[in-house]
Length: 457
Image (cartoon, rainbow, N blue to C red; front, side):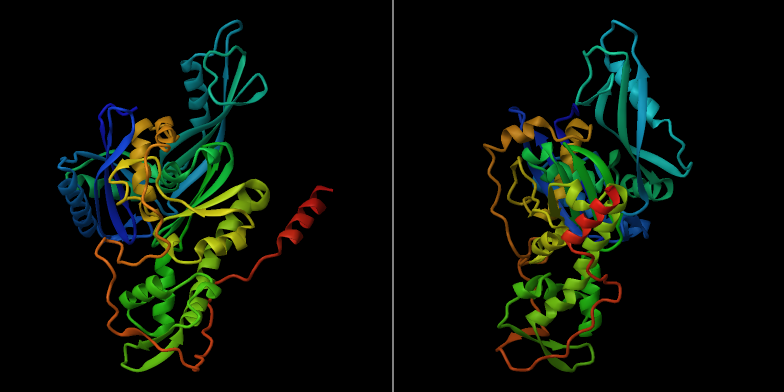
């Protein structure tokens, strides 16, 4: 448990940088007392590409949170995303002297032996997350301290990041006048903020859909067991719209948020938009056709996630019980329904829960990682603090917002000067070509299960 009652999370993303200040209340609950979000600068797919601009944006985000809370921030937990983070699972063993209880030093020794795996010298270990323990062949043990046995085993999920990107990230934070309390994997932080009590006993896939990347964490009984990063996010959907509709990126983002959907059947069937291109010409496109541009890219993201999990752990339908999608891009209408179709599993949109204070401000999926950083800072063991579940019965969060209506910075709807809804017409625009990178639908659930049984028998 972190001794200081003030914990700060700094989520440095591709599209926005968010600072969340949390305080452990006397009753043990977590109150959010400060929040600041600014557009991200100098970042691309989780890595720093411009030190000066990234540092400036970090200062702005922290200053905004300080103004709200009245607290001076000195140190922060920083999120790490992108494909420069690597993860492996390693096995550790420790021998216990006969007729002696297992003590914490024995557990530490088993974990340390699991850490003793050859890693690329260019990698820096971020997390060492123990899974379940095994004592003399008995599996499923959460805490072996105090038990008797002669053989203690543990599987450890080791997350490491490439030294260069981590050094650049640390330098930006330090140049902003802050100390790095620790780096936290983005997928881990999102899971800590969104997993509910029942899901702590299951295997759950957490998908954080950001602007430049989509981060994935597979949690088994509350422990992060697998993690990956997909180099595609909400920005790519925006880029597709800008390219096909021939409009600026800013307007494409506004169109996506106000009128877009990941499933065409969920779009407003009676809405037609008048598009003014960069060259000044105008044409009409229905909301249905707009969503047909969006769907292939979201489907591609889900397809890449399926491939990653299938290869690492086995077929998704047999590995997990639930999928939780979160992050700013998950707020696009229809993302949950499309995920349900692609993964053939129950899907819900994850929001931070079990918090007090400014809970209404940070209750959206876009704040999952930043709130999760604060939760990680409480225990620093990669698990959800028990007090969060205990407080869920008494702390009310704001009702979910199904559609993004503003610009993500709390400034209300963004005007669309050259994209205006018009009365429905009988004009049927030409069918847009799908994204070249979009993948074809894979085999059906029944075919996948048949293949599995065929391999087994």
